[in-house]
Amino acid sequence: MFWFLLITCVTEMTGIYVKGLYLADRAHVRPNSWVYNIFIIFEICFPSLMFIKILTKYANSKPTILCGLAIMYLVYVYEVITDGIFKKHNLTITLMAVLFVLYSLYYFYCLLKDESYINLKYSPAFWWVSGILFYYFGGTACNIFYNKLSTVIVTPKHYLTYYIYNALNLILYSCWSYSFICRKWLTKTSAA
Amino acid sequence: MVDKDISGLIIITTLIFLIAPAFLVLYIFIYNRRKKRHIEEKAQMQLTFEAEIAKTQYEVQEQTMQTIGADLHDNIGQLLSLTSLTLNSIELDNRLKAREKVDAAIDLTVRSIKEMRLLGKLLQGDQLVVSGLSEAIRHEINWMERSGKYKIKYTRAEDLPAANNPDKDLIVFRILQEILNNIIKHAHASRIYINLEYNEGTLKLEITDNGIGFNADELTDDQRGMGLQNMRKRAVIIGGEVAIKSNPGEGTQISIFIPYP
Image 1 (spheres, chains in turn orange, yellow):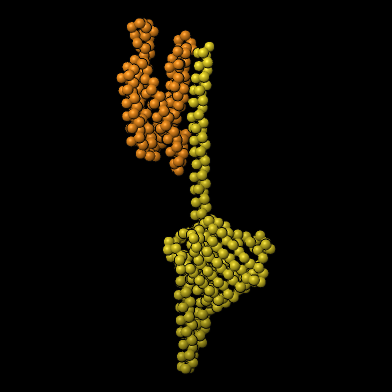
Image 2 (cartoon, chains in turn blue, brown):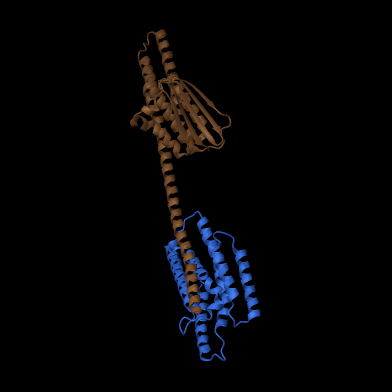
């Protein structure tokens, strides 16, 4: 988890830096999409591995999730070959969102089916999956209409997608932060 | 203009796509709370059941103790007093009479020993339930027949399930004890028929007497409270029911249906 968040921070900072360069010299510098395209490699991998870990309690989901992982990487390679690295890999992102939403819904289904009671208020897995569901399901409209949205400017400095993704990021990281707090509480309780 | 339309549409769609998971999360929370309540209710029911089993166990033992107390006083106590009197009245000079009295004392002592043996078996009575309901019923009947006041006919089906359920056996046995107590106290009966059978997962115990009978509708709350309602309550706890058929002058038939094992 730590490494993924570190990679995310590095990506975001690199993205801002490249964007600055691009705005200064549009003729010679490419937009920062390539930075996020590289980040997709980690973005596909990390939540998939987390889902394997979370769903182990309920079912043997490893083969299915690994299969999904392979398909996402195949689509990613396909997009690299056809569109190159500088164009945003929207197909991979959409597929990733669909698969992660399906995994989240499957987790909730298992949770409902499970006869034992879990206090969801303090369940790290529940809040982690909720964050994923809000982020990827909420971003569906943006992913589908990405080509149209890339021309819609709300303020002179920012596109509409900027605000939507900021809001989604806020929800995602709020849920994840609370999930980490719950995890910490649980560790403390177990230690006591 | 087109940009504004698209912006509005995307914002609304995104909001809807955020509201949907929010409702899902809310639903899971509500469902989870219900699940918790259900688990708590189940645990409470289990506690009630266990308390009822413990109470029944205690009542069976108490009934046994009462019977033993009464028997020691009325039967063995009398026999031993008589033995003592007989031995005290022996005149050693008159060997012939003394011989008769010693023989009488020996006879009384043998009868006391027999009674003591029966009492010993009765003490194991509540333990008998563990080894099977039918065995416990037979033992209870043997004890009741000793008084000579009742002719009891006991029939049991051959196809009773091999697997026992000790908790259910205990409660059925206690209900039977209550019914027999009621017959002794109120029915003025001379014949009792007890039938135990098993059909499609249901155990049926039927007790019929030729006593004075009663009208169930005319019983006062106190009369109904201790016996009949207790029987019904206990049967319900193990998922069964009690059916009572009775009319003044026509005897009483009580049937207990219990899902078994």
